Image 1 (cartoon, rainbow, N blue to C red):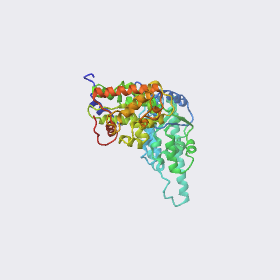
Image 2: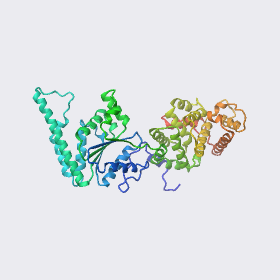
Image 3: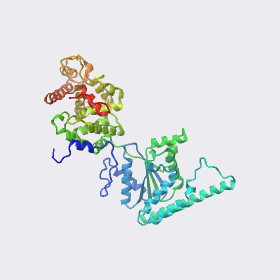
Image 4: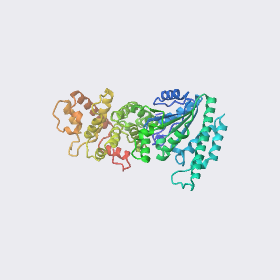
Length: 481
């Protein structure tokens, strides 16, 4: 290691358990576009570029698809292309009583800071100040005026205020078009995270107040979550149909591939630096193979066993947590962690019983094989899964075998020799029926791991699993060699 390279302890301190949104490069807006969202931005820009009619778009994407990443960069790209474009995180403003004030406030602030539009921004702010009471008047629980004339007058006043506001917004959008030759773009993000009442009212305000030529609204939403918010207010209605009436066009943000997403997070969590720092120590030699190979394996493995993007983030965050709590000169055992952390997510019961020594490695591997089912595996992925399997076998050995011979390894020898198995339960279901050739490959890996153990005095036992579990969770560290 270079003497100027960060130490393992330095890396532990710098590794974050929660990733923040990366800064947008002023020189290259899409520099960190790992999910190739620039193409989506170009398509949407072509859609809104010459839009003269009022237009509302929804961009639907589940957690982990990068909606916020995309919308923030698209807003910057639109500005660079000569648009007036506003990015508004609705969740940060859902403390407001009425979302109309939040929207107009954002509009006023944006224009006041842009050369040539300062006067328009101040006009909007002045209008809000003059009509504050009427705009914020609540209908639920309001004591109505005594006479019918007053009721009708209040109704007429509200219509007048709305008309004046729309008239002012029309003048604004005309001014934006005159200067930029493009519509005004208002991007609203995180709507599905808002209070249900705020989210629905914001949609309704846009529909009834901002239906103005030359204004385009783009909503970044998780449609399923927003539908749940609608049902929480209106009960058992067809929320999908209700939501559809607000949007002129709806798009689904393409789902990121789990492999691409996983590799992107591995880089952002700085796991490669940490594993590399560990691998320079001789005592960390077990599974300190080239990290890029492990990164490729884990990225493919997550997709293979059906982990969601949120699950993948949880797994990698847990690896960071393990790394931050790792004792000096102890090991990460990445292939064992690759089995244990997803097991904790997908099968809590088996995970709990396996770390307590009540279930053997073969049962854990059988569970993983059931997740994979009949998928065709590449040669490299098959090799990595074999490493995982052998690592799991190495950790378990029943107490009644006095000679300390690993039972699973012995069964592999019998299988490779075409002999009957004496304890088939110590092999996974798939391996029990494997060909002689595959059994021979597994035997070779078993011998390799035994050589590593002998050369480093680094025994892998059930205590290894308990040790890793104590790093994954908040439990007392078990004795480990």
